[in-house]
Image 1 (cartoon, helix red, strand yellow):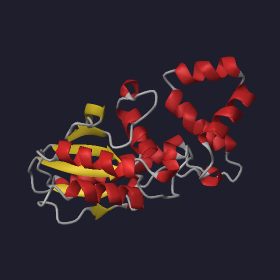
Image 2 (image 1 turned 90 degrees about the horizontal axis):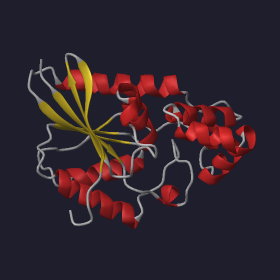
Image 3 (image 1 turned 180 degrees about the vertical axis):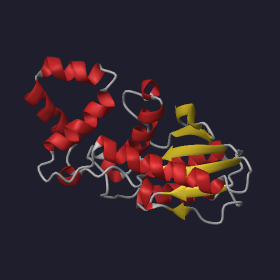
Image 4 (image 1 turned 30 degrees about the vertical axis):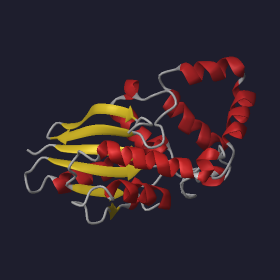
Length: 223
């Protein structure tokens, strides 16, 4: 069976990222720094021949995908897939990150808070925090977002395998949704601060399933 090499990219820095606010289904454009970083990533990935490209339906991911595919004439247009959309924060959309941290410290106490941050289950704990603080109960759960992104990437991989050829597939999405996927297949490898803007992680899909190859690689300023 063919091997599908998935290049999982987090979008460039946005205005809401720079403002330190939660950004799930809310959207904002890339900052000038985000554009420059995406251009560096595009140059880093230029030697890779992509057989297909997919992007979230949110504008920041599509903007990043366009910057990358501008250097890949083999890709006519990325396929938009709503399954790649970012984690839904529910009523917390747009909330300042600092407010979230302060609320958790108040509820748990500084000692328990530090233990949770340093634990191996910190990513699961982070999503539990979002759910517990969202009074609208609209925020996604860890199980829900993990199931969604895993099904989406498996569907994409199976579709690309149909002609029996090994392929390189570009996927441009978001920090939390990609972190949820990587946490499921290799929890110890997920960075404590999750995935950086314009980072790329590579996962191979074969008959045995998903296998992590590389994670959270970012372009240098010289790239």
